[in-house]
Image (cartoon, rainbow, N blue to C red):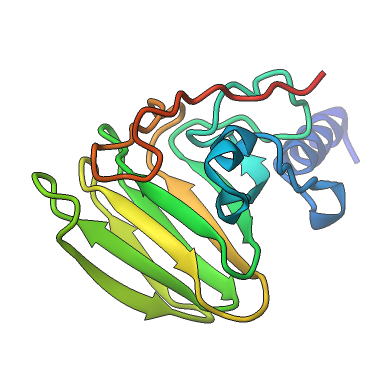
Length: 178
């Protein structure tokens, strides 16, 4: 093998190794959305970050996350009975892909969040919610649900809670790992 081939192979090995986020190295972080539990334990959810930190705050000091370039990718662990409160991402679309359990997803009217349409999704079902459309979710299975969450930006703006949300007025104070 000549020197150029060895350098190319080494560069490719480094590229592939730096592009993998193995399940064994992931951590379920129930602290990043912990601020929501002051409104009740039903809001307890865990995030498993793979690419970027989504819209849950600044996790740039977490060397376990692959850096985002164009989107973020994480899994959410949704305990049975869990509620993801109505919220809006003003700047990005969000995609949810169900891996385990059943989850009721709702989209809410922009002007009157009490008006909504809901669907129950299960294993390998997907829903895409456009930017600016309020959304919420609720675990309806008796067991925990796990969903993939993809957000269409490297670093999305923090979501906000419209007046019809149970979380309206609650300030997003992301927890940083130390």
